[in-house]
Image (cartoon, rainbow over the protein chains, first blue to last red):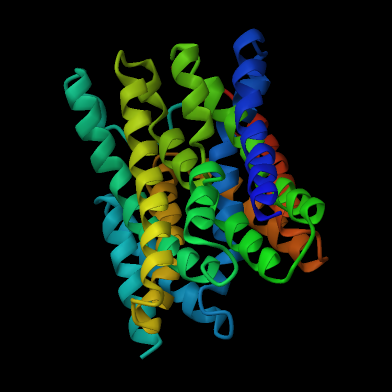
Length: 97
Length: 245
């Protein structure tokens, strides 16, 4: 039964990833569709960051927010993303001590 | 539109080796972010699955949040259909992401795009998209494949080790690492916003939509899909006249 669940999960995860390869291959889109698709990464980033970041420490949502602000400040200097990641980890670590 | 954070990379020589190195550097934050989460997944999943099963799930599904959910549901004895439907809903956002990425990846040959599509996660999508100009380079496919394989190996390897060793990182440290991928998303977004503030507006609209939807108890998976699609629609107006390709 567990194997069937794993296979089922795999199929319903793979298909949505795979089907666009064939959709996009054929069609050529008007400008507005291209602009929409170009904006998707930024919209997705927004939705992936918030409100999820408040659940980093579920009982203390502000810790995620503070960690996020530290990441923003570090990212502003346009150094490698890894420094934002490390800065945020250290911040959360200090807040949970 | 080329509002992304990757102009530094575009001066690099365009050989396959350079694309590989560039992919390693670009993908490393995902690797670092995935390891602790994969370990945590392995530890959790070992309570309800064998080592082979939990590793196979990472190999075949490669989608973090849904695997945590799946492991918990299997542990609770939930039925096949319910787990599979919940997984579909939670991972459907990858359909929208894949559409967006494949539109950028048009110059890449089909036999590369198929495996690349299967490696799209929130993180590999975000990183690949913000380095979208790589698609136009002769070895762009190598760049994207390197990012994805690096992320995949961290995910599968971390799951296996987590399942083998059980709890091995101190709780406080693993808790702190929960923020890693959020911080990576922020680190990807901020330089783009500095170049083009309207990109930040799109992200904020999408954040607020997602927040509102979650608050009215829309399923988390659908909330992200709806917020991403509608947030992206604002790009049609906000990014107009911005196509300096």
